[in-house]
Image (cartoon, rainbow, N blue to C red; front, side, top):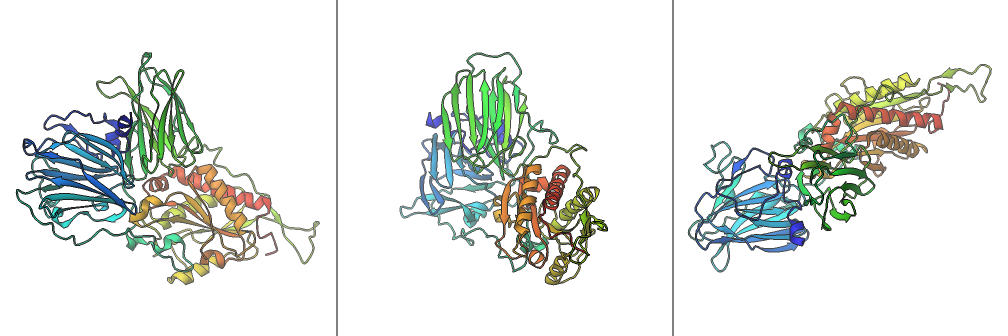
Length: 597
């Protein structure tokens, strides 16, 4: 049973692969077409050279050290192979030898599964691979004179194919040879032993988040010149309507087949997101129950055996199938909180040609936010009562003047300072959201002072510019809020997603104001909460004389957050959450007060 479980755990690295049937244990016929592991068009995986009698490939040796895993294959003369990095691991297409069939889970911390079948070997990793990130491949001659293929895996490795293999790959500008594809790395073992060249760039640690100078926000260190680029966003669930919430219950079409067995969940990965496919027999009913640690899928009308798997992908820590009297329960453990409209999305997809099983397609990512459009009634902030001014030392009730409460909204960056650049440009999105907040608050009776309403800065020098923005938070104004977009370096992009709010001890009520902003924004958007931050002194906050906060509304460097930040509905929800947080602060007294002007 363990063998059956491991076949589906993280070995299919794309949505296209998750849609297709799992690989079978029987060898494929020559020139079989299968979907690309990276989600591309079908390609030939037939052997490029006849399989030599008695020549085998497989049964690797493996070891681990400090989170990295090494896998070593022996290379007999005449073997050729192709290396394909994907979001779910590394695939080897092997020619000129018989691949020894084998399935195994957990070769090490950085290789969660091994499967050899037909002419393919798949090494599943808990993190996505690119052409140069997450792995390192080289050939070498050992003391016995035999040649070996050495594959190192780890989240902090850089390199991809070593020089000895890279030299054998066709240039991307040249047309691919028959049986190969552009973007694949193809190498051939020669008839005699050779010595692999030493790599010019050995594996090294990924770049960590750069140090942030005093007074700057976390994303200020990543400008347009720093090359912050989000990984390619994942494809949408087939048939999914982004403007509609996922249905929490449904039924596969067709007449119920009593006793029909539920097959293993099929999983695939794209950067920042895991796809799960449940093949439902006709008539199967389902109910989805999102919760604090994952998604529970209750099925009726099927039979199932008890199965489970651990440490499957970064987004799915484990899954298990449990039989029930009338069906089964599939639990997908994420380790992060899911709501009815965030952290996941699902769609019942019609059967593939030749199959009667509908596919319950589920995407899981903590960065998936609520993108359900707001109704006109929902896009309203309740009126904020006016304030009474103070004259002298006493409140003259008979002649007191009622005034609108005043807040400062600061869209981060502007002018020559773009801020973080990835899926979106920080200065543009910050201004877009700020203008939406302005309009909501003004209709609620709040006077809004904008630090900028166009693409500009107050001073060309960054420090002077920040100090001038902060200087607008003066007595007579109740609150100050700065709006920013976060970012991470490309090598760390998948680690940064969600919303966080910063405060400094510039005023006794700044922390309370920041908490109200964070609470309301998370409630309205369903975004992942990174919580409150105050570990860094920020110029735009510390120089303000009134309660002040700075919100990072998402990560332009993350593939899922990048899609959120491009979505008008997400921006509407973000603006509404911010405006409601400001209103709550004003009506509950979390302000600088309404002193005379």
